[in-house]
Length: 414
Image (tube, rainbow, N blue to C red; front, side, top):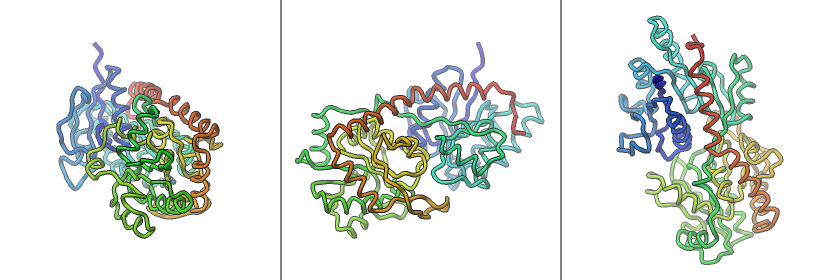
């Protein structure tokens, strides 16, 4: 019987309620299902809780176990690779997070080769939501296979790193249509009544599902909604996010804009954010909405965008980063507003941003087209795109790539 290849996955925990966690869960499950790989996970955002080993048949270790001041587990990563004869290291994280560990990985590879020990290969899956900074992206040229989320991200990489000997692959994120899909009218009505207390079926409900951080720019969502509400008072905004995070106080934004909480704006219970909510419940929240609105300043992919698309909800989003690729270069899968201005928020470069007027125009257009044939055509195209890029289909690409890299001549980066 052929030996299973040992994989060390360095990424968010497979059951963490994060985007990285969602991606890790699907990709690692697909690799495990082949029967060819033994998977250990050095898990970021995992605190040692008990978990279902039937659902997650891996050895999972908290990344910060050795050093609580090292939340990404860089120290434990090196120790794990020193002590374990891994065939493959699979990494999912931002370039600036993992770049600093490259010199130690290079040294470790050379040490293993010198004593004729198995030398692990590296696959690095990375997002680009603005620009690539070469000096903080050294994992890309180091990896045996660098993989990014979109063709736009690949272009940005090659623009800033034109001398790469191995250009990055592109593998999209997927969506599971078994989890995210349209619900019947009766269920949708029940959710709107029970969760949102909406007695009037004509109330226009906007939803934004994103973490409250600078890059997501949720205060701009509130600003745009406050303007929209002046014209359409029979409306509500639901923000599936924390009121306070990343030093951003959304309740203060609401007060400044004269928006009532609850009433005009609704937030979830704090516990549902810290613990995460069941996927079926999240699907109900998407379905209850008349439109999904994001004012993000950039997305590597935007999982909540494609989840909303899968649920049959119209998406209103900016013309920046990966979004035109997802919503169609002709904007035929959503309501895309232009980004004619620039802003600086996180030292990742100037980010394109939409004006209040342009955002308001797109919200209004979406509202005016509610329940019309043009809008149904938009959501239909969006749902077809998502089904064409389901996790089931995306993970076939991952298995093929991992099989290929695992059987290449080792130590290419030495």
